[in-house]
Amino acid sequence: MNEVFTSLKRTPYQTFAALSVLFFTLLLSGLLFISLTFLQGLLNYVETRPRIIVYFQVKATEDQIFAVKDKIEASGKSSKVTYITQNQAYEIYKEFSKNDPLLVEMTSPDVLPPSLEIDAKDPKFLSEISELISKEQGVDEVQFQKDVVNNLLSLTGNVRRITLIFFSYLLFMSVIVLTTTLSFKIALKKDEIAVLKLLGATNNYIRKPFFKESVFLGIIATALANIFLITLLIGMNNSLTLYFSDVGKLTFRLLGLPLQVFPFNLTFAALTLTVTGVFSFAITSISSFMATNKYLK
Amino acid sequence: MISLQNITIKFPYSNTALDSISFDVEDNEFIYLVGPSGAGKTTILRALLNDITPSQGSIVISDYEITNHKFKHKAKLRQLIGVVFQDFKVLPEKTIYENIAISMRVKDFEESEIKNEVEKALELTGISDKSEKFPVQLSAGELQRVAIARAIVGDRPIILADEPTGNLDPKTTWEIMDIFKRLEKTRTILFATHNTDIVNSMKRRVIVLRKGKIVSDKKKGGYEI
Image (tube, chains in turn yellow, purple):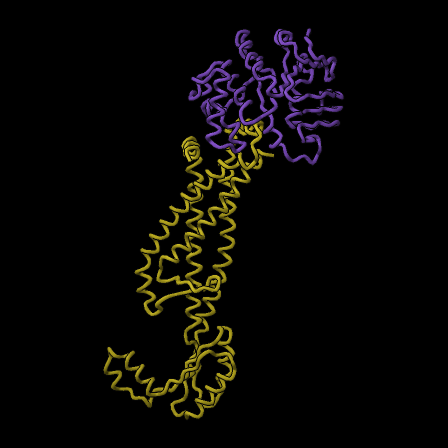
């Protein structure tokens, strides 16, 4: 490690440039990763909520309602269908309007429509279920969160694409800057490399100090970026908790395992650290290999 | 055992550097390669280090046929060879101890073995008191001793010395030759020089080169320009 510190101290400007680029790259990578997983969690949340509510006419009979319910269940596109009677609807209304007793007094159960709350197995069934039941007898209105889901799907897709392009660009830029910095350092040591080769040093032996140096810079940059990211998450956690008070928690599946994205937690912070760490290792390994390769050929 | 057979080396845009050179070297033999500048002494040493590939012919060192185009053991080959140059080629940012130890570190020796062997080499070359100094603090003669110490540590049975006394005054030259005398019979040494005095003083095998050809190869020869 002494050799690494000595080498870094001897070229402070190059060290600063490489560290800055790595830090910035890893910080952005971390932010993109958090945004992407948060959006995915939000999408998963929306996908698991009751999305279709079928309101029946007030005079609709229970037979008509159960006929619609049976038809939906028989389609195989729903995971759950819940019947909300007029009395249950009134209870919900009372709870919702508890701060306005006058409104509650003016309403009675028989003016509220009965309804069915339907959980679709997949967001793509939303339109199909809607079309299936909209013309059934007794059905007054079909509501579902088509726009919300479509917007989230579109946003998640766009973020994925932008992330991929951005990641590639960041990787390219970081590798170029780090390779240039290391090449400069290697140029300063070309006499030493020549002597080492005469003595029978293998390419890996010659590469090792440069590899160690760039990986060390990567570790520092990863640590700094994660300290920044964790501080940011802790700072945002309270305001996001207020904003998403109805949501509770957001999760997404990683390698088949459910992972809580929000509220932010230690496991998620560890995953962010792992992702930025892997990214950092990839950048530093590729850079040191490319920089040394030129002198070893 | 080193064997060179019909080695021809041609550099681009220049004359033939070596022209059908053949000779064998026994284990622990001491050989002077002599001749004027441009005769091909350094080219032979570079070919033995696999630094340049002959246009034709074959070189065998130990079990390695190094002229084979598929030869991929350059590092292993060089780990058998210690090199001593006119310009010392010591690393200015490392201490004398580190400069010598690096010859063993590239071969993955244990630190305890390195310490033991480097101390012996420092003693043999008479620079034990300089181990913690840096090259800039040493004279030319002392730097050449460092280069010799570096060449002999780490189980290297062959030493290639290219004009090792070329930058030294007469007194230091003889001190360096004393070290080489102590090393002979323990290692195979190829010593390139054009210093007639040191060649004639030792009466060892002398290969005389001129314009890339061997003009004489005498078992206990001398040399006159």
